[in-house]
Image (cartoon, rainbow over all chains, first blue to last red):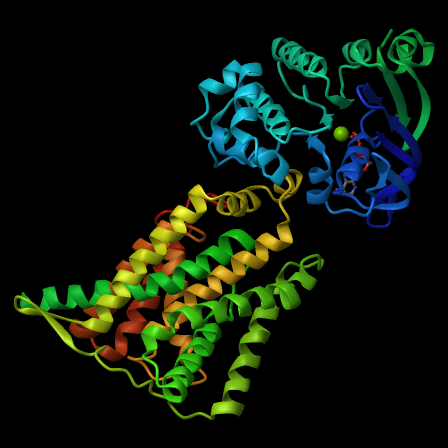
Length: 234
Length: 291
Ligand SMILES: Nc1ncnc2c1ncn2[C@@H]1O[C@H](COP(=O)(O)OP(=O)(O)O)[C@@H](O)[C@H]1O
Ligand SMILES: [Mg+2]
């Protein structure tokens, strides 16, 4: 479904990703594991069109998308739920969700999607009329995920959805991610919580200093000595 | 007392005009984060267009509102697309501001070249007729300004709150990268925003032309006042600009009579400095991107 082929990308003259290969097949949950600063966010931003690849190819459903601006990537069916939530703080939660369904394809079915999404997030339904900026961190993260789903994406990318949240909220976020996975959406997940992430992932990539150093099934990576030492602290 | 009430009426009517000009300025500031120093020259362009339409085609200036507004909308789109957008990724954000200063100078000189420094009065019938309200009088032209001011602010408010495009414009102002992730084409949003801002001045031009002669530097007076309104109302706030415009309209009218016509600009700019010192966020400013 999504293939990154020898992708190189960075900011200004600094290259961050040094020719990475990543593949996500339809229906899979794939994770990218790596230390802070390894380039996980840069990878997702490059797929989303916010960062231009300087070399290599990105294809989605067989078509080259590496040169597309972000709004056209979204229109193809790829949605990024960004690190740090990035809600529209002075808009109501309802308007944030409406913004999630901005692409023509999603807009046509907005009401129906809104009902489906709010069934997954009963707590968000209670806050619909509040300003997004006034919610707690955990609530904001739920809104960010709900907003991402409003686009009816084929591929949903999560960037650190549990970052900075209290342990009990982290657990709720994972529950939500698991439920979304069950709806059949293809997922590319980047998370600090490596143990739980590898447990739900079909496959994982290990990214170190902008290069993929390992890729295997989630279960195999969980058993791997290097992964256990570097990322699970065992 | 009668004089005072009459001056208040005049001031509010004038406020309607300031509202139309200021709303465009504050919109461009709030969304694109750009101080448009060419705003006054867009007004000037609109006034010459109105003059041309009335003298060459024999039309009433008010009839020219749709074509002039549309023309200015397109001019705004083009300015954003071909002058400002290429500078969007410039390392220094101030480059765009200098570009609007340059555009302002270029337009003034273009007008000097084409029309010279003469004053061009736009002929119009009925605009100076007055309507009696008991002991008070309102000119038709004043009333039209006031009604248009309210209509423009209300229409923009509804557009921003209710439409997909308006919501996308607000989203872009609040978080540009996130708006892109929702599928918003930010460059297009900026073009539309600049277009709407310019279209507002186009309407203002049609309303001003019958009362005030066109000249290359005519924009300066109106737009300096609009800058005061925008700062008073809170930069980027639509309803702030509306209330601010009414206040400045009143100050203009009252100080022109009770202090001295020549000193009213001094009073307005005294107010400007005072606001900047005491409450730099303006009366309704909630901080950046609040609208
Ligand atoms: N906007 C940016 N401009 C310049 N360098 C950046 C920017 N964002 C991230 N970086 C750098 O890119 C590297 C990878 O960052 P990132 O992709 O955010 O890593 P991760 O998400 O794995 O923590 C880091 O060294 C970081 O400092
Ligand atoms: Mg990151």
